[in-house]
Image (cartoon, rainbow, N blue to C red; front, side, top):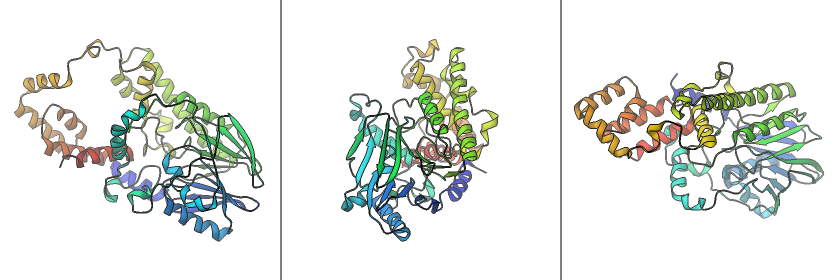
Length: 410
């Protein structure tokens, strides 16, 4: 199958609307929004762990919850601050719930707000917000967000309780729970452990695809060693059910230990292999070509590259540890890119260059065509190469970025 076909099949199989009754008081909602929601029934109210991505979707989910037991929502716990987990919380404003979050481990770099324009533009490309449903298919870890579907808007309730501690024990409406800091995809991620039920909610530190160890929309370095430590922390709990922020729950201690353990081992191996290549003096390009998921992990369905990719992770590790200079002396003070490309263009000649670009496209060597088009100026071929390369991608994020870039070349 093409990358596009694999992504479509994965989406159709993974995000059907499903309510999992974990036990008589805990329910997990999959496919009701881009992210998942876990509802815990207390003595006289519902406690929500995350709140889906839009107000309309949260209202629809709550209507299903009321069929189980018609109670108000007294508390919402955010596993982390990403908007697709908080955007539905405003649907419960009339109930004045306690809204619980953790402060980030570290603050963003100063002046990060000065990058809002470029970060927003790249976010739109990564998630395919301006694309049709046929173009976008899915967002890789869930159905497309509601604001792309005319299905509600982000509606945020601000946290009313913000913790800076490592671990907090609470009893909320009769339900004992432990909230533990576990930085990974975000610095404010929290694990929610329900000891009486042996249930753990992991936010985005674990879900059933290869994770976004690096986000192509642009982000500060995500500390992968710390993420691995948080995954190891998850494995210390005697959980009988693991409820992730995206994709299906894992039910059964043996399954949790095996699947999350293998997931963790695969990421740790990627980190170790990357560092080993770096230590041998390999360049960024050489390292990214050498390091892939090891053979024993490559075909596991819960490590499919439908969201992040191993290549992006390797490049992020490299620059996260060593910075932009990869040791190649030619890259220490390179010519401006435009000047170097003009030199290449003069050496190759326009006729031969165009001939090779067209041949590459005909042979479906779209990546080669894209790189040759860095030298040439051919918007028609560029769009064709971008769309062709997009069709080969299993990663929804990579696919979206390529299609959005093609759509910008009218």
